[in-house]
Image: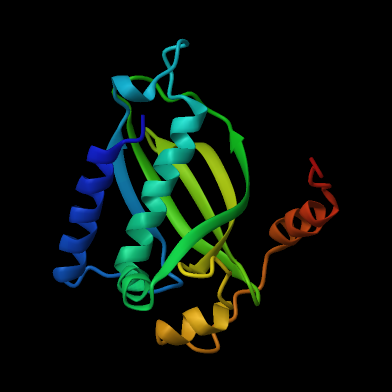
Length: 181
C-alpha cells in the first residue's frame, strides 16, 4: 500500500520548512529522513526494493516543494512524471534502521530533468537511483520544455550538463526497444 500518511506528513514538513525560510535552490541537494517500519519490509526482513522507489518519490516531493516547484505546479496546472529510471542496490536496510534520502538535479536537457537520489542507512549508501523526470501539462499530458519550467522558477539559463555516466545511461536508453504490443 502506498504510504499516504508518510506522504501527508512529508508534505506538511516540507511546507513548514519552506515557511521557516528553509528552502532549496534548484542546484541544492534536498534531504529527508524516515525509519524503516514494518510496512516497508519484505519476507526477507529487509526493506522491499519497491518501497525504496516509493520513498524516493517522497524525497522528490520534498525537493519540489522546497525549491518552489510545488507552487508552480499548482498555479500552472502542471504535474510531474518519471519517464525512466535505473537503480543500484548495495546494502540491506533492516527494520527500524533510520534512512536518509538525498535528492538533487544532476543534469538538464531541453525536455528532461535528470534526478540523482541516494539512500543512506547508518551513514552508508544503500541504494542509488537516476531518474529521467519531466513536468507535464495536466490537461494535455504533454511534457513541458525545461526552459519554461526554469523560467517559472526564476532560474533562466541554468545549464547542468550530464556527467559521463549520466550521458552513457541517456545514450544506452535510446537504444532500448520498447515493446510494440
